[in-house]
Length: 369
Image (cartoon, rainbow, N blue to C red; front, side):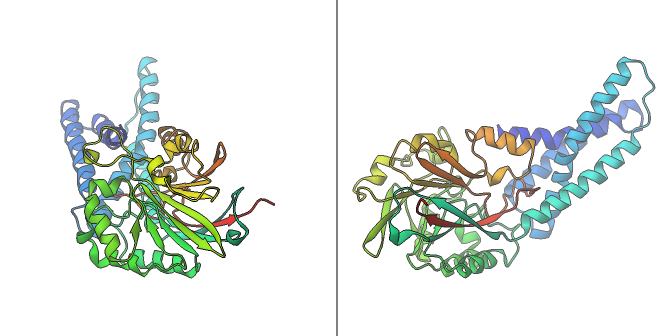
């Protein structure tokens, strides 16, 4: 559905431009059709990520210009329709087309600039009712949705690693969607994940893009750089005689061919044998299952997937509705706290952020006052 909406947003503007150009009317449908196929081809190239970085960013900017111009062209077309129904004279559209494209091009450039910048560390304090004294102030760096690809800056991942390590965290958790290619296709960069360091280790759980690009390969790669994948299982962190449970679920996407034959998320299996009464922190890539998981003794669920909606306003609202009301930040779901990160990177298919900055999340666990 989201791919269809994106293609509509990309294709509407070219059709609107072609049908309103100040040329012979009989040529307008042909021009509109040509521009339509050009827009679809642009989006296909972005999805595949087959171009060098400079060209990929340029093509993505073209796509963004078309997407951002869609609401402007739609409003213009509604105004022209009203003028036509009232039998008013329709003015030449070359100036409106130029103004809309210039404004949309600026928004696309600014959105792309915000998206490719390395994320900053965002401190978030989270209160856990049954948190032992030993874990009061415990620092967890949570990194999700880095989406490493050819579009990423050469020093992007190293910057993320350095900023995460600079927090001197007790624990580092990775929430999935680490790359948009297979690990061996981006290994010169991805091996830097092995430089993440925390007192109690680095753990990961998969997102949907790991499935698209070879789940087994991703798990093997992470293991090779010292990052343990939690796949329907948990580990126990001990400190001064107290215990904290870190649990991880595989991603869940019903009816998707990439998930066929894969083990389903099973929280009963994941928590089997966990110490009774110890707080549980759950890694689950998609936030939309939070109400289901809140029925279990989970204190905190960490998710991503939404990228915070990427663009504030209507786009973020649509993403929120598609994820059962969760898009960005902290939520209380029954007795469980859910935190949804904006994500640390950008996705090839839509390389823009407006008023929704990327983040490396520093989770600080606190006892109730």
